[in-house]
Amino acid sequence: MKTVLEINLQSLEYNFNKIKSLVKPTTKTMAVVKANGYGSDMIAVAKKLNKLGVDYFSVAYASEGVRLRNAGIKTPILVLIPQTGSFDEITSFNLEPSIYSFHFLSKFIAYAHEKNILDYPIHFKINSGLNRIGFKESDIEKAFQLVSNSDRLFIKSIYSHLSASEDLNEKEFTLHQIKSFKKAIKNILPKLNHKPILHMSNTSGIINYPESEFDMIRCGIGLYGFSNNLSISLKPVHKLLSTISLIIDVSKGESVGYNRAYVAKENTRVGIIPLGHADGISRSFNKGGYVIINEIKCDIIGNVCMDVIMVNLNKVDAVEGDQVVIFDEKNTAEDFAASVGTISYEVLTNLSSRIERKIIS
Ligand SMILES: *Cc1c(COP(=O)(O)O)cnc(C)c1O
Image 1: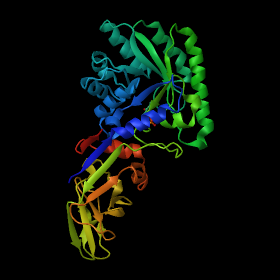
Image 2: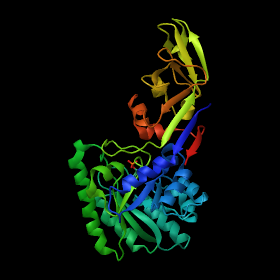
Image 3: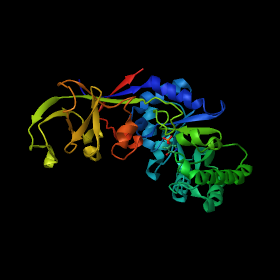
Image 4: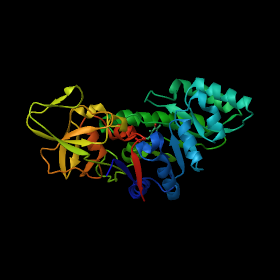
């Protein structure tokens, strides 16, 4: 036994089909596979989604798109936050950059000019309220002119990103975002002689705001099995398992781990689990974190170490070699994350490359 992250491709398929069933049959699906497929296995996930007929992939950085291409993925790839240092990677691997700032735009046009590139597919990003990247309302006209006056670029899609689609208390804000995206495209579309793909919704947008569907959905966390809407049952794809390497008995008053962070209030059986912050279990799990052993929640005690966590076994009947569940379908990564006030996105994407992936197909 050792630490292993199982990636269940059947669950991925289930989620993909479930999400597709929520939108019109003609709506395209972009699978977001950035950050190694939300900490899973980007290549295995992308290959599976290709078989299922996904239309597009998106990644954050060009290097992630290069990984997909090197694995033989031929599907179009949108790079969400490309950097000006990545133009060679983008163009040699046929990746499609988001155009999200005047700086990036002018550099990319200059690059395309220098390399004699014409009609390079790009994705025009509109900032409709998230205030992260993209052109805000007052800049759209100018940015659009620069793009459309250049024969170097071809607008493959126009898109924006929702800021609070999972929070129904922010409904008014979200509807306003959708409205301002609609307004922007209404101004742009008549000036183009082709129809770019329009897209706006992430997972929660797909579920909560059908009016944000447009021509394509961008689905990330939902594919991996999470949504904050309990009426949509999805299946977690990630299952993180480990084992009890050894058990030590600590007497009342003795301390456990670095900086003596835990002092035993009673005689305590301590399980040593081969998984630490180098694997992506952050030190925020020092307080409130737990694992499941033989169906019982066991608290993480002391400080999370680089390679090991220690857990309190007093409530469980356990022996060395027993399986440890960090999260699975029942005790989900979302629950695990919530125990220390974070979210599944962070826990999953933290899972480091040191953890062996086992693909369940
Ligand atoms: C990460 C990301 C997504 C995916 O969001 P989920 O909530 O995981 O579905 C979609 N669009 C953009 C621009 C993103 O950065």
